[in-house]
Image (cartoon, rainbow over all chains, first blue to last red; front, side, top):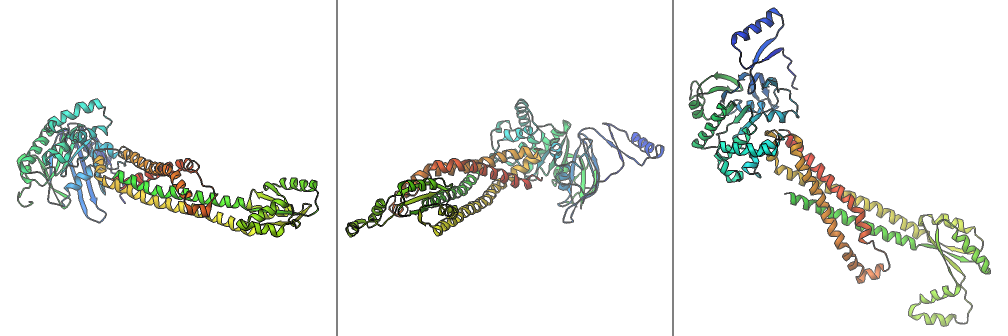
Length: 278
Length: 281
């Protein structure tokens, strides 16, 4: 049974914190106040902080192990690694589809580790999510699929009428708004999924292999859209195998292996020894 | 899929409704048989008209006796002659000129056949009775048959109802399963459990409601026609002539609310229970 980890941590919510302030605060609490607090600097909305996170499945398999990382507001981070390395587990944990075995997760300054069943839907509304297999509602049109994400947040019909065409226009689907998912190409379906993910203007966008089912050209269309969304201030976390995209985008790369984070570089390629992981 | 579910509900309800209608008619038939079983009281010879009248009044005063009918010796002889049918002329010529040996009799119709023994005990004490003919064995058999049929009817309906619940909930589960991807997607985009559940619950309730109302309406419309056909047939005339049959208005207004609530409840429970596992995403 999972135990609640009651660690003594002090979270400070700021948008900007130089390292020196961080160190001063740590010294202050540890040595002046003699309190065993560790200070964690947490930035504003769009921030993800994973602290010593471990997920062990019921069959004993380890999804992620002792993962600690911070993804700041507005950052674009690729999570890369071979199959079974823990990329998708990390995404599922951020979505609270899976519970952590150990550790903590903060999203937008909130500790979501022990969110109960009723709180999870409200967390997910703050996270846009895009999957490899699009996951569109087959009985709804493009417009209705995107509008659905707003309806569940109790948005007014006026807001829906205003926002949905705007987002569809942004992803280039304004002319396909009445089409059903089975009438769209893979790229169009993924653009629709992307429109659904961003229509509520979430501070964080989680993507689990969004280009996995797409041809290279279409995959680049999607990546350009994701880049555009990121430049507007949305934090993007993307699990992927697409080494060419990772290498070309020159964004932050978090490399996972056997559930551990083995490499975390600010502007990197798919891997240091770039062909070893492919 | 929803239409298939509704048809499944309807098929099960047809069995429940038809069983109820059949059981109800069998019980009515047995009740009627019970009402024909009475007591015949032979009056002692030599009683004056006043004494006979007094005896009649005493019999009428007994709680379990619904009605009394006085049969004179002449009427009794006529009845006897009629039993000879076409050959009653022979009977009549044989007794012609002889003194009527039959006595006055009272035929007593009882309210509750089960209390026949107690009623006989009461009237045995009355003055002027020669003998009492009873039908305790017949009464006992009829009471047993009626009780048995009542229990059997309840058991049949209960078994059908349980089977219906199993079949209907499984069909609704299939409907929900066929849409599990939809449920999972809704969960991913942040829909609350009740936001997802409501449409399915309403659909389940509607499936149950229309699945109940459809067969009820059809059987209601067809019932009187079926009864007319059956009672008008030669076989029924020979075997069961004169026996009452329940009309549609005696059965369906009674069963309609039950079928409606039963169908809606099954639809509700079926959809809620089958959704539970899909909501854990």
